[in-house]
Length: 404
Image 1: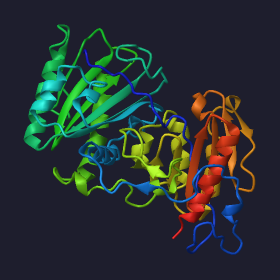
Image 2 (image 1 turned 180 degrees about the horizontal axis):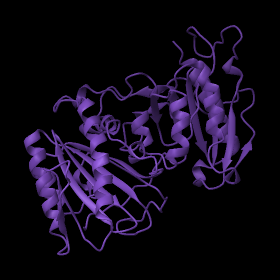
Image 3 (image 1 turned 90 degrees about the vertical axis):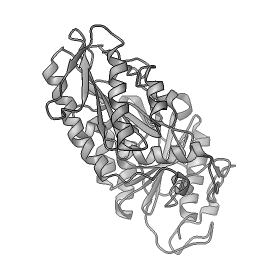
């Protein structure tokens, strides 16, 4: 087995959720309804409080990234299939063959190009957190799965690509031995008996599902069982997914339900999708990017979060209803090890706002403030408390000003 499993750093590692609190009816920007705060009185500093502008059109890569974000919602985190895989390890949208090399060996490139690879998504999780920059293949330090789902123009192309992808990977090491998956006789799989990993490639309709299973011991039965259990769930999920037809990617919208426009952008403009952010994900798609999946997934589920808008330094969440929003904010602020964080002062006069300092987060995300308004919520990140407080106040004002 010589397949790569380098993991991509997850930008959502720093996330926790929040939601909006009470109110009804529409407003003019900055105008309060009876009983509501006049957001014009908040200290928002230089930050905008009006909805940001979105581009009317994207380039081809931007539209492909939107379809990749849709596909992310149809690719199961291994944690959903087996709860023991609680530590997220990687997630990435693929719109070009170079990014696929984070997960497959370099000889895969000609195969992908020859058979018309369109878009893909990779995810992974394990029972033990490892450094994200380090490949886990053969480490014997974890049990986990790394998954890549690739889309091709038609089922014939996918079937041919699957066979060739396995063949080129198999040929990279003379110790590789072919393995059968009893429930998936048309799948291709192989391993090295001295290395506790199993790589498999399965064609399903227009998709190729590549699974790399890691274990602590060279127990082939365990590796086969873990692979087949994942395939059982993922095949069913792909069958429910409706891919955007080839040539119709330009019909996709970056912000179909207006959630991304409820998230503050410092310059008042929503940039095109960048491959990791400036998109709206389903809860399932978002789960793939979380590090502490067992800790952070339950609050999202309890709150009925169905959409998450992702930007580099702010996130928006749409919850089930107003009543879940405040509880969601409180639960989110308390996630993680208590010794790694402390509560700090929230922005003045923002109802229900909570701010924390995270000692182990990257410097530019050390401070986090959560706000909620009606059924919507937001999390803003920053490196300085006072500035993060102003951003949180502006974010609350934007949520209030965005009600229709």
